[in-house]
Image 1 (cartoon, rainbow, N blue to C red):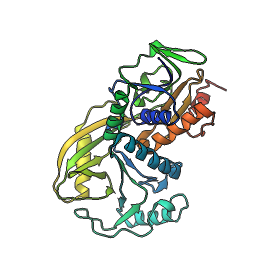
Image 2: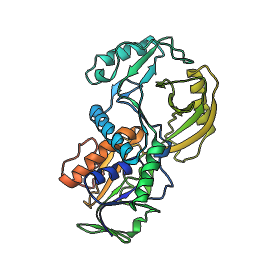
Image 3: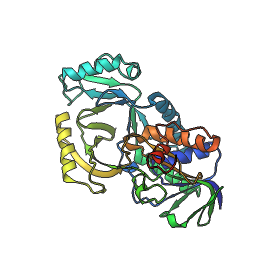
Image 4: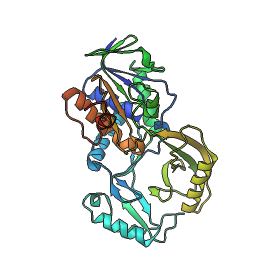
Length: 353
């Protein structure tokens, strides 16, 4: 079998790469064994502002514009609905937070995304003495539905192999790679935290941050927006809400913990004043990098072996954007932004000059 691309990893990053291959009429095969992916336990919330400090994310408008087009096209392709626009209301805990919000409203990098008029309307069962700040151009991706429906589409079209990738069976030549019965012009590894098992890239500083979240049934809440306080709460339908998320930089397992569950439940209790029932508890490792920037680009020795990783907590927006940048780098030799180019670490590790 001859293809243009082998894509290893079928989470958000890998699926975004598959989309751009399809868009550019490039042939590909995807390989994933479903053993470990943070995508299926991701919160899925997208917004252009860091809600703790009220600062803009890198290339926020470009990421939002592309994501809007990207997910709508895939919804149409798959005849599914998983990309949902909803406002985010940031609950203020003090006058100081209100003042910081107004400062951000005057900042050119964030003013486009923030409402400079406080949201003072009552939100049923959520009390806020200091009111709320409204963020524009926000919502959530039903990550499970996106991943599962897209993987199903690829399987039905014989573009997906459900198996463990065996690194020792990859042969890389100057102009192509060979893997078992597949000859490809290039291979892209989009494996998330599993990159630490990859001998081509496991020396890179992918740190990994464990996150846990809950699904709760809250019949009385009737919330029609995302609310962010100490925790976020996302209405996903049928009185079910996603509640998250925790951050653990030490534990690198997918095991659910009582400590995280209690932390999230306490956060939910402090946010709402009605009864709730926990229906599911999930845990996963986010692929985070020590300098908080992604890892994108070619292997320092083999120009047909690539990495697409380090999406962290913002994979919904970063996935389409970074995959687009990578495929244009491969196909059209468009240089990668230094903020995402993995070459920054090759220099630090003295692998290249």
